[in-house]
Length: 287
Image 1 (tube, rainbow, N blue to C red):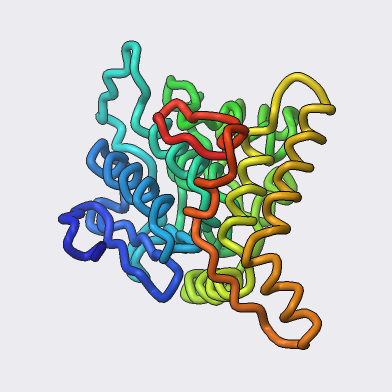
Image 2: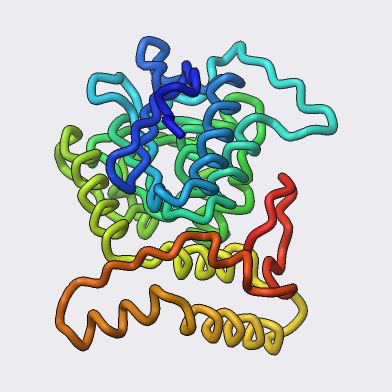
């Protein structure tokens, strides 16, 4: 599959080795959020989930873009009714992706630029000079993109309330955002290169199957009791320890060299009836 031939318009996906770079292609519109952008982001993350060539996905803005994502235009209308709003679709696609996901926030971010375009990701890199805001209550609307779940989970209820209910503009170094970002980078032009270097290192040194199963345990923990969690961790550990990546990692450790872990997610197809232990709402079943 060649991502360049898939006729995306709102994003530019580029495969850099094992890293899929997804660049927002709405710089002239300040990377405002649109239904078209939401549809394309949902699709590209679903494709990346199924593509064994991809180990890490980065979302970023073009270097000359005036913002990472400035939210939706104020007159943008969402007909929600009984379906999902666009930001929620993106959040689910990112959250359910079995690959490592990184948001390289190399510009200002507001609204969905703070929620669906950041919170569901595994790692977040940000420019120190970025202006960040959850403006919903000052716009007469409520938070979206699963942010009422993600923000308290990531930062705690007290800080989530402070961020949502004040709607004030903050910098990445604000105490209210402490712990949200993996790295706060002084120069804007260094955000994406820093995220890419990190992504390449992870792509080379981690097991694709171990990442997928670990994310499954974290984002879709077995419900009911701690005994169920112990059971699922034990099954997962036992299964992975028999596969090629674990054998290669052990051999590389003894030989004092970098491992070359090549297992794809197809390995998980032979696990048995206990996997996947959850089917996500989108219909894609995985751990």
